Image (cartoon, rainbow, N blue to C red; front, side, top):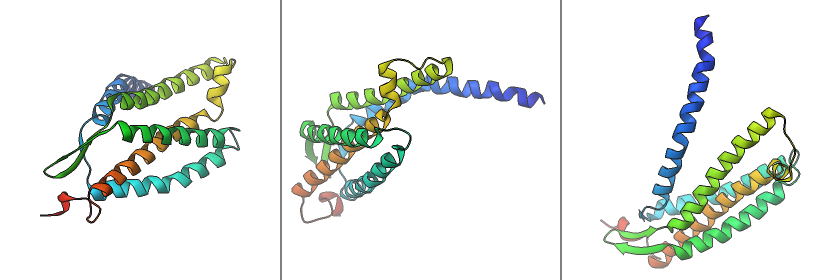
Length: 188
């Protein structure tokens, strides 16, 4: 019986640990997002095709979500278009180089900061919406926009960016080494 009394405290401690570690995880995501990387051919190609396969699944999920959120599919599509545009700009702003093992690239730090901020704002808005629903305050235009299909729009921005950026890196890698599996990293 006393063990059951500890369960609410354990859940509260878990939530408090999540709140404390969330800024640390966001900072780590930003730091790894702007780090210099090696473009390995098979990884870039695999990532590009897996992202392309996730696109119809995402749109199908948004279409199913229109049963509960009227604007889910529209917001998902607009988010995808915006994300693809940001991804194209991201490829354009990325610094590409070459070392002894192949192609390396460094994403633009401001773009990575903007995308990480979108994720942080989404988490904060989710916590705010939860608080608003618990307290019973369901008024306001901004709150209505968040309750509509805006969440699928934010997910669309992130998916569209990843899709365009990965395909852009893939094109850059193929343009540099068109005949092999990704360049010098495949030769021994």
